[in-house]
Image 1 (cartoon, rainbow, N blue to C red):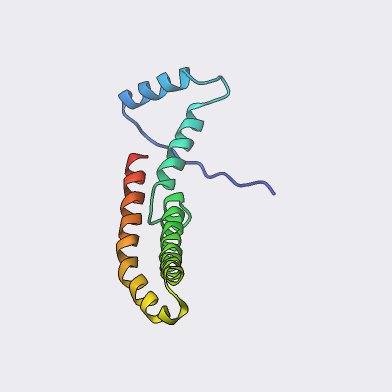
Image 2 (cartoon, rainbow, N blue to C red):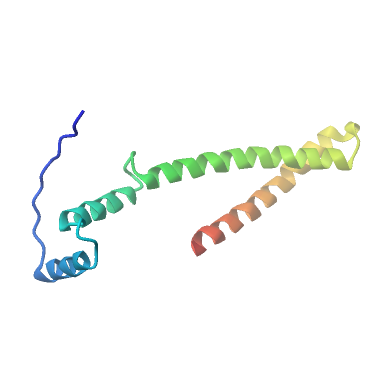
Length: 120
């Protein structure tokens, strides 16, 4: 099934037109001004977090879900560590300790992730 195209017209300053022409001149012959304009619009739309279909929206919702899973796994992992360090009679103490230390560990994980994301 062929996709229907929607035509738009736009105005730009002479400086913008000149800059666009300069960029087009550096591209292969099969790349047109229209191709570059479409690509610029695609990139802009992908960066909009509030648009449900955008990459940013997907990345944000995916990251939130991963954070939830990491938090749950972190808690369970902490419980297992405490259980390995003690015997089975201390299950309640292990859960309490994991809960108390888990927030600190999660904060450390989050800080490292944010540091990594800011450097990317």
